[in-house]
Image (tube, rainbow, N blue to C red; front, side, top):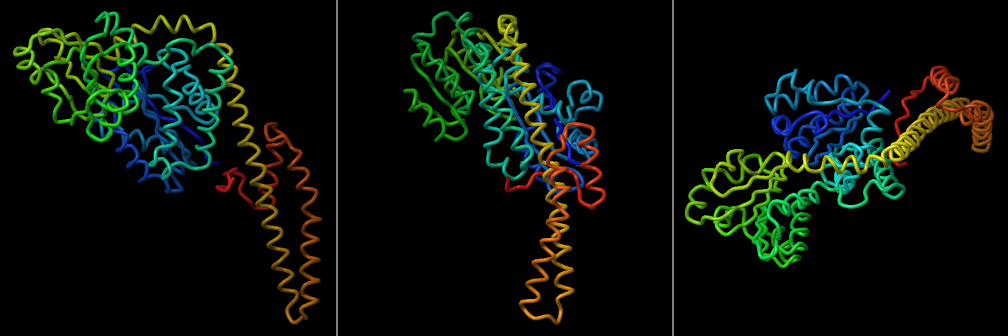
Length: 428
């Protein structure tokens, strides 16, 4: 029977330094998964989920233990991590616990700040990426749909998301505490993706006078800058933009440091001023030694997470009800899977019995006239439906969650020789 699992790492099990070592570029993750999905003996479906604080792969496999090991080996090969490091700083969940984990993530219960606003959108984006279509299937698509429902219900039925709950929102408050008023300042935002766009909007709202957006794809930077009344520059122009910057925000997906101390030192010497660097990227955009340059004030995700820890306490009163909602949605998803199992067995039995009836009718009607052949085929179909009535009623009335219902499904599957894996019909 195919099982759901998740293999991942996040702020809950690994500090930022370890997560950086375990980080695999999302494009590489998709390439690796595309090479595995479709091997029916290993991985049937997969969906990666990547945020600033986590990297997870959800999978469906008939051999989940083996599939998890293969994915761990893939991470180890690409990151040079050791088995001990993977065991300590990653987690594995299977079946209902895998579903519960994703629903908690979507609800903001597994975030640094309870009820974080950004994460629900990131779960949705994971399913909407074009690459996902080549590796996801019916089961994980339904799982993520239920996760989004759980996340929306938690936000609608509790106050866990009241006020600023996103990491980006918390980062802005940290900036304001460090810099004071942002009015009249110049900010350079590196990266025009979801995080970059969000921080750029917040900075403009808080009074940043000159907003500069830098991105590898200039057209995307231009679109964001035009929307916010800023200016756009090419990725290659980063160094020259540092001279007049009061604030530089890193929010780009980059394999190597975008700004290093060696790059900044001559610029800082020629244009002395206090510069704040806020690194919201994972892996980081700014080298760790940047803080050694004169006039530089470094703020990173670790400092943001420290600041927002108090917000978790303020929202903790809403957690019990949020967990109840998550449990309700986990049971709904489990019920859907059980119903699909019963439907799969029923469909297999009906198809098999009707095929036998048709085959026997065709065999017995050789040499008969057209009218007699039709009468015999009609009789065979009627007899097959009559014989199917009792087992159909019994299977439909059985509770797939009960031991008796499970026994009946296994018995029917064994007696009629049909699988009971409950794999959903792709057309459903």
